[in-house]
Amino acid sequence: MKRIFSGVQPTGNLHLGNYLGAIRNFARLQHEPDTQCIYCVVDLHAITVWQDPSVLAGNTREAAAAFLAAGVDPATSIIFNQSQVPEQSELAWIFNCVARLGWLNRMTQFKEKAGKHRENASVGLYVYPNLMAADILSYKATHVPVGEDQKQHLELTRDIAQKFNNDFKCETFALVEPLILGLAARVMSLRDGTKKMSKSDASDASRINLTDDADAISRKIRRARTDPEPVPDGTEAGGDRGTRPEAFNLLEIYATLTDTTLVDVQREFGGKQFSQFKEALTEVAVSVMGPITAEMQRLEKDPAQIDRVLADGARRAREIAEPVLREVRDVVGLLSP
Image 1 (cartoon, rainbow, N blue to C red):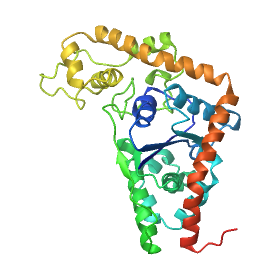
Image 2: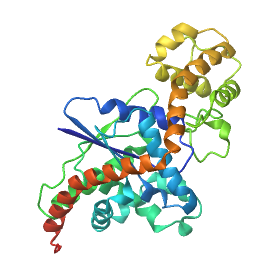
Image 3: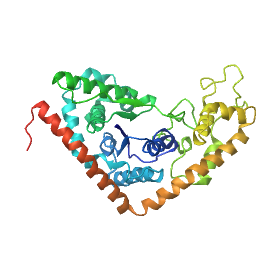
Image 4: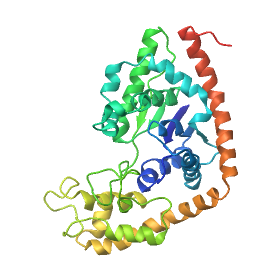
């Protein structure tokens, strides 16, 4: 059986990139035959940088609501928040004792997030790739959907699994495989086509939030940066993302929202003005995102319903993680109660 694990941080401002790059695929993957999907709101990862406690719980529910609104079925998939499954945290500590400092020093995301103030970064931010490995291996997941920017962390997970097996002369963990899905696995900023669409961007105009209404979506797409040239038709010299990143970002968003290809979009709109293309993109984006936004708003009015889904998911997740951790403890030589 294929077992898929993935997670989303509850840091607020979930956006179109989160939906197209991850959450939409969560709903689709659950319908694959002989597949079990485990989806986690990774609240422990979120607190590697300071979070307002009064906001974190709401953001956790918002992320769970996004899963549900996008079509993830809690009866079919397991949906839970990370902190409700302590097995993952205990396995992370064991992995802290397996992983090597040199491996973590190569993690580019830590360097990006810590910036010039590495000495002031939390220890949690430094070692969170080990917790990510524990998230995955607590369930002996076989596949993880990842974007290009997360492949390094998955490689670390594979290294930890292999070293654990070698150190303890066992075959406890298999090497998890990446799932890289879809054209828009990496949706870029509406203001800068060379940067990933991000929750942390200071400009709200850089992203389409899952909570944006039709007017906000229309305004952001209308103001999205392009260039003076018409929509590329695929025949012009140098017509690629490298030379026209903002133009191709919008084309790829349209292709992914409509489940078509970039070639199809260029064939339909090539040579037309971007003002005309943006009208079509707005119509598609509103038609796809509107129902999701409405369902998220409905769910967030009933937080108790979301909490029940998360609690039930945590119970089911622990049923898988407990025997895995028990096996690990026996292999390492830790006495269990």
